[in-house]
Length: 562
Image (cartoon, rainbow, N blue to C red; front, side, top):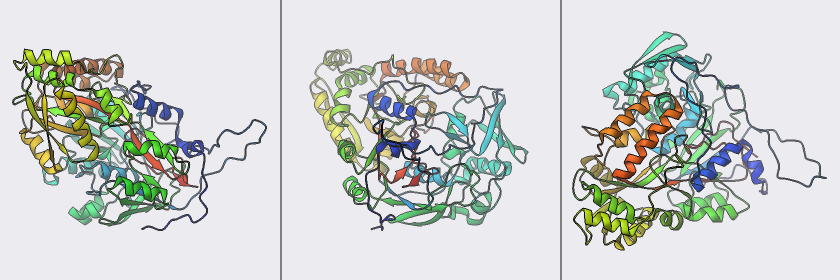
């Protein structure tokens, strides 16, 4: 049990004060994700042959503290400045896997990476792309992306960040011997070329409008070449980045610790914290009790059942972080019964998504109308989610030659909310004469059946990506080999639209293409789109200036403890 870092009496701090770093648009995004409304669209991405305009400051400035509303006659006290010191204690729901971003396939790893590593470009809380390790970028032509890099940046081991380091990282991801999970994400990059010490050129195989967004995460994070050469495979336990915090230790099944990097290049704002201590607590109830008891300062995720009680608890702060996620069920279109489109539609119209979001998820999310969430600029409010219609479901059964219904099996992980969701679906489909048999499997079995396409339907929870390409292309583009298209879905018109979404740089045009594509998906129904969940997080009121980015990753550079 970790000791508390602040032994002074705990007094409630206004929620408004807590959310110093939470802009009005962030609040709007959270509400839109919860209510299924369209969020404000960010500015268009940089078009070919245009330079990306750097932000006014190189990093977010910590917002000035505010207080809860007071009577007009009462004078406002002076704003409190951020304070240095303290270690923030974060509860995670599963153990991290690796500290090498090139090898990572875990969402939890990313929670740590965004404090220890830095990507070439970063996301803000409006999902706009901003300068990161690259000060600016431009397209010399649609297949040539040039980055101007920051000068004076040091890795945690004291070595210099420069164009050679960027080139090294891209070559490492592309090297088959590395077995990098980022290879597919940068598949359109032919090579990285050093122009000069602080300029690097990415030569692309074809235009790729989604690449910049991809580089805001693991594919764009730069590891110290000297550390990779020193530690080899052991870099997974000896990570060296350029971020505001550096690695200290990782005690398996206990904690992972970072400390403030005093040589950090960005002098605007933090880092204010002395360090970050991550603890793995799989049990939601135990984790929440640890937060209430003062043993944690942050919970990475609140179960839907806990959201309302935490909101009502004046000694805690709950934040609904808008999500990019797409949760639902994938049907195998390559074998019976779901190689028959009519049977897929019979199931789709037999499901009551609104009832599931309300009854199972307790309203913590939005009913899905496709793979793109309400927090995305590409979300189309004019496309309605499929509503339950038993008459239509039976009509499709008759069309498929199964007027009396049919039986199929769904496989899914044995987690409480997935089990509850599948049982609700089973009861709904039974009213249409469709028998859904539920089979609970471990993650390894689920992954194996997806890859081999031996399943009939499987539960799928995708955490989402900042560009809609990350929620669409890899899952629905016709694939001849292995890949993420586990449904086996193949449609020439859909393929054409997905290719165009990468070739076109204008955001408004891309949105139209995605809308056309989603209409095809709803008509073909290779997947049951159920919910875009909000990602609720819980905090001690000591935590100040947390800025929720809709990818759900917790960035602590400007956070401080009251």
